[in-house]
Length: 316
Image (tube, one colour):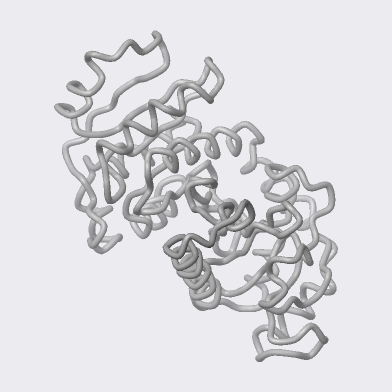
């Protein structure tokens, strides 16, 4: 298996990304090859003196970088020799099995849509966040900002995509799917959540357990929690802020340590014809390492194929 990494992506790239890539070699199977995409001078200098086992690393050189503040569509169309565009192009051609980046997330999203493209039947690809539960389990929250304006059928499909991910990658036999709302009773919420509830309640594609309130996010009421991207992004950033406050005040215990983004590495874009994983812009070497491990796990489970099979099953 070959996993591509945008060495130039992230606030602390390229030094931190290359360090994370090297850390991952000790934890990935020996038949996994990393394809590092980035500046030729940097990669040549950093790798020349290292005793890397043969076949573990390949380098692909890029002459451009898409910076974090650039507009995604313009950057993708004008910077054809950037590390992000090259990586997505290699993924589309089947030259790598997964592509990961902690760089410009908008460019990754737009580039993925134009390059590998969404799976047939997917209305809108989505991203999610891991939510640690008090009992030791982990749930996922989706969408977290990819789709700030959605309709009821889109939320229902998010539920299906999350259900498949929880089954295939997280290993949950029958994931419980819920809808984030202002009350647990049927009929609560705005027009969007009311309509989504009806569609999700009637769905045969996943196991829907009803509404969930935000105060129950961490007590194992559901494995997959669905909301629009506007709500999800606000909620995620609030969780990150509370983690930083507790870290600053030395109030972290074993449970709250699990909220450290480094533990999860990144988030895949669900619904694409390929494995694309987004990392946090402030990713450390440990986060990069875990992003690559996540990419490997997703590619190994053939998640895209499982999504295709599930959508085909319920459309015929």
